[in-house]
Length: 409
Image (cartoon, rainbow, N blue to C red; front, top):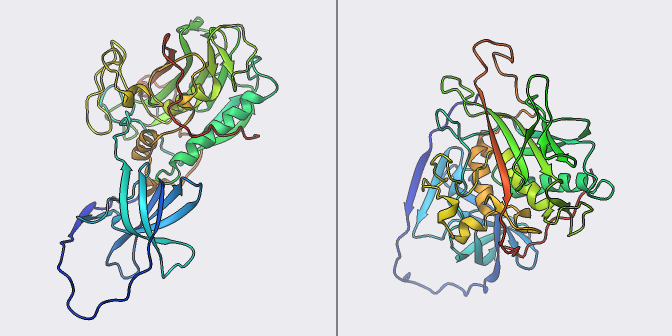
């Protein structure tokens, strides 16, 4: 465990000054203006230790990827804020930038001469799942989450298409959070697996019955027919345990019984309501990563989002920042808008697994101290989260960004 670093905020106040007296400086070259989205921001101390600068990665509307340097940011446990300076370049912001070449890194980086935030609307704040007893937000303890695909897949799609989509969904999350989180979703390949608390995270399709099969001392457990997918997250729930809030197992089950699983609208199931596989899979992986729904169902405990605001009941909000979010708990038939990861999702995952806290060890979770047979119990609890169909909702696409093409495993 690395020693905690003090978080010190250094504030530099930049005041406007009058014109400089003396000979006029030579005219500067006209800046280059670009518009794009900030996809990554990395702070660093300069060699003399006098200032923090941030290298922001910006993807322009033309598809060009640029590194833009700006004064201020976060590095080594310190934050440097420049009041009255430029708006800070942070992942998820859509900005218009005036750029000048960086003389120290010609051709490789640019200096931010001016920053104009074009989209300052607040994204739906992320909501993290918490323990039941202490209210501690959930997180994984290792540098990666290994995910196993059940080999039997689904009969609803041709060939191994469902396996391709599974790998593509992992990549979607990894690419989205790479700039601020150490956590990686790692594909372990396809195995003959059933779900359950075995420290193996499994993605499983249900083609015959929308139910969890019986085990020796427990009967078959069936799910809500309106749920396109369910995710079961098992975590340590003991305020006296130093591992309180640690996720130790997460399994995803996908419904090809009361839904027709499809890719690009195609699927051979008999159910009338189509469930786009990427749409469902990306949402369910959000739960696996510790994210909650953006609104509460009746009977859900009260909770707050990442900004500390109360999470509303789903029945009492029409706020599009909530209802159009990836982690909104309802979907329309054939909906595809949850197949991408947004800035609020990234913020939630990165808050739980920031780069600075990388444990540097990838692998399955350590077994709990008491084990399954300890009479004291192992302190574990489970949460079952489902993505439900919302009849009458339109299948509008929330964003214009294309869904990633399936990648071969």
